Length: 149
Image (cartoon, rainbow, N blue to C red; front, side, top):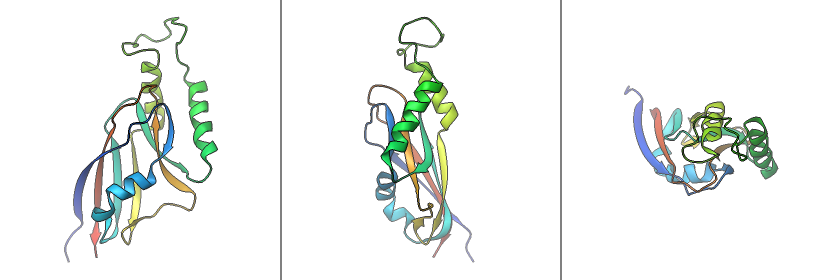
């Protein structure tokens, strides 16, 4: 019996401005072929940036994404007044808050694969959270490991 297989795929997200976005369909459309034939396995998504995040959360009510972004903005404030609350502000007042939020949320998620499909819960979706005001081109490295049918 052969062992598990491993493949990696470089994904590029659409450019988003600050906010929380449901990207499950973006991920599954870019990985539809590689996921086919995986009987049981794991998809690991790693965001190759330090000012945005990935999460698994509510996939139905878009207000949850808005509330999440608003809550993170209250927890980690931006130094709009220029009072010097952060030393690192080389790229603007949203620079250091974006790094802090990225550390709080994280840069990766792992999702089980069952019969070629992501085994997400009923209300779960893959979120991309952009913490910078401007739009950026973001890359994800996807690793698929598993037993092929």
